[in-house]
Image (cartoon, rainbow, N blue to C red):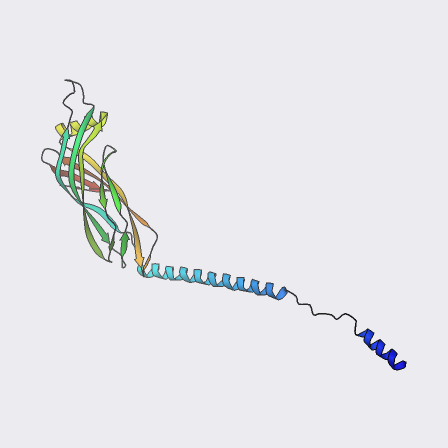
Length: 229
């Protein structure tokens, strides 16, 4: 009996529930935060390294603004015609301008590295009225070099109206001097080790005067300094 009761007691003790180990999740969250911190530090280091390299390049290269100027103007023809239907003594309400000129631009790179120019369209205007466009394609220019770029402007019987028409006819017939303005912005980027710098803008603003009688250039002025021919 005693043996049986001991056996029953032992059997009853085996039915107590067993405790299972509990695993916390704090370690995974800490690892994630650690990875984020490492990534942030790495990105910060790379940004500082890129900034340091850029500063070294600027100090070594010492980039200078390129020069882009209108060097020469060749006149094929400039013709001004007024309508023949205007009554006598009445100023014409319109005038027709035909133009064919060749523009020669000079691009000068004073830097130790190359330059990439974007395509440019220069406006040709009379009294602020756009007559045509002188297109210059994009190109790359080596260090310490000068390049000549030629483009042509052709205008066929452009209709100049009202007050500008009267001024145009007077300039052509009486003054023998038709002034045109050539203006535009050239975008350039400096090339260093295969990378390009932010865009640098070079402005061109020139005034030319053409003689309709001799079909030749009388005056050219760009910026502050002018050149008479």
